[in-house]
Length: 411
Image 1 (tube, helix red, strand yellow):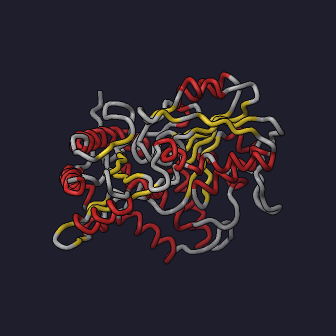
Image 2 (cartoon, rainbow, N blue to C red):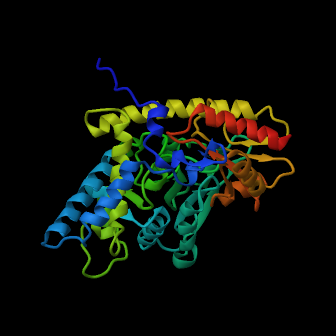
Image 3 (cartoon, rainbow, N blue to C red):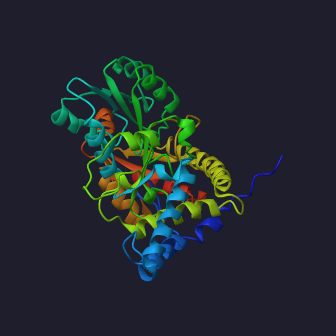
């Protein structure tokens, strides 16, 4: 049996990120804001710069820089196909996940009439809720919402089953909660959707940086993700089954292409961002040495997932005994990403984040993270939560710094 390639150590990975050299007072800044957007390795930034300075053009024209752009976009589409286990013509680029989801919702909504139902969940980011809710007024679609169980950070699966009916046309569910770190049992969601002949639309924005994705194994119909959450620029990616991308007609300009994936891509795209997205996939693959890109991604994600489990266990175990600190989401050992949200008694999340930044050089996000149904269910809306997210460059020393600093605040 062939031994899987070694994955670079956290220390070696950190060398790829210029941002990690930033200092505040006498110490290096520790970035725990990855769930809102990761830092970018130098090779990704270089690919964006090269595209803008050396191959800047619009697509599909008969001169050199335009043809160079076409090849670069095709290469990025190939990279994202490897990243998702998909066909290249199933990869749609757009401004961001939110815009792509609104676009998909409007296209699918054309097929549905009054009384058709869409199931959403309280665990989801609003980008996978609001686009479907808009169909209530536009198409008379009925939205059913699956509640969150606050004690576990998971969905109420009995209520999920109850929400399904012969009128259900689509189930929209997250693969992982950006607020709580919960990894959702997508095989269970898929079975419920299939039991009534509904489509499955998966928000993998928070999942994609931490776990390997294979859309064939997931058995979903659509999936969205955001490269800026896995070390790339601010663009969005929509994957759809090729038969659906051909049959479901999105809004488009008359002269625009009639075949996917360009059928689904509106206007002139962020070419340099798309090139950078492909470079982000190549960066992740580079963590596991040589060989076919898909195999290197397999190895890289297997190890990064294991390291993430170690980091979140250390962070949870370090914060849980701290008096005045409340932790939210699944405990370590249950399916989750290395993302932990918490509150500190007597201290607003915004104030806590500001003090951690100023006093300890720890950069954390705060608020509801657009997962406002989560924070409402937890009873912490509108102030929300403090969120610490680990990335491939997070190390144990940074986690220990965070534990110590939170302890000092709580004390």
